Image (tube, rainbow, N blue to C red; front, side, top):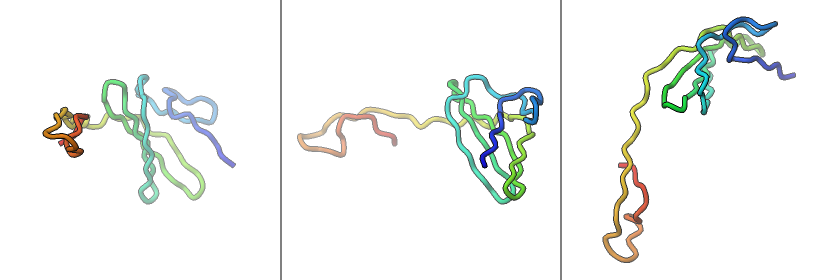
Length: 98
């Protein structure tokens, strides 16, 4: 059976414990498990990264930690390259990360 828990609660609601500081404009998520710990990270529309930690106890997850802002990653610069000669697929004119 799946038991859902809201990780956006600023205060305890029913049986869901509080996870304060959830960023309201989160738009992406990642989930990771390491040993008896699980981590949920979200990225906001402004590029900030926030994380909360949960404890894995057998088949039970305990999510009762606040959201903590992480170091904002530096984006990779993208630039366009022109064709150097006909058929040059390496420099196709699209966006290339270098």
